[in-house]
Length: 277
Image 1: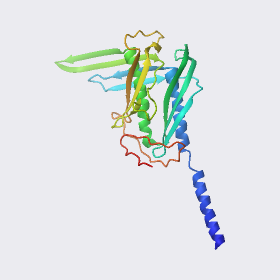
Image 2: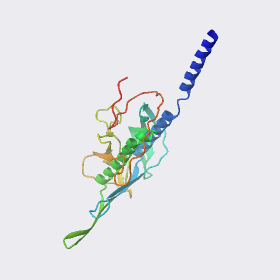
Image 3: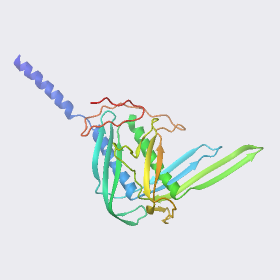
């Protein structure tokens, strides 16, 4: 009897040990995605980006708004200050910074920074159920880039209208923006900051704030922008999870997430707060 009891206990221990050892790679992949997103956002902030947008909002046109943004650089020296993983939602947030020296911006110019620290935040998830929230954040950030270019560089507006027999027959209203911007940053990136520069509203649409020192802005041809306004300006970009004009919402999945090194609850609109632990 004792031998059978010992064997039973041993089997239970092996099963428990195996379950803990094979927790899966969901958290690891989400963390890796958040870390890489952090580096991308730091590159876009310190090196800069080229942004081009086109809008079409005529009364007889199908509305369309498209933005293309691009940035590229080799980066090292990023410090990851906090990695927060919500195991119930499989969302990882990575908060970090980089202390700058000499860098080349998006136009190939060498910029000398002194005692400048760039703070940024990155996001990651492997679960389609919550990916839409992060996609909306990224869309909001790119929209904020476009809003900055609109304020500083301006828009090219193309308009054409035809009226026949007092009735609007054709109406075209197009806008174009093309600029190179560097030095923009999200203020108050920490998840616990009371005036955090990113997040979601109650409907699930995302917002991202961007601040910029206008001494670090040029147009796409490399010409310095002369802006008669405040030295630091702030814009707010918006992003949506779903294109109501074109597509339906994607499929949802409820993942079984592993334990995390730093556990935290990431509140999303439309979801009940997690019970206190």
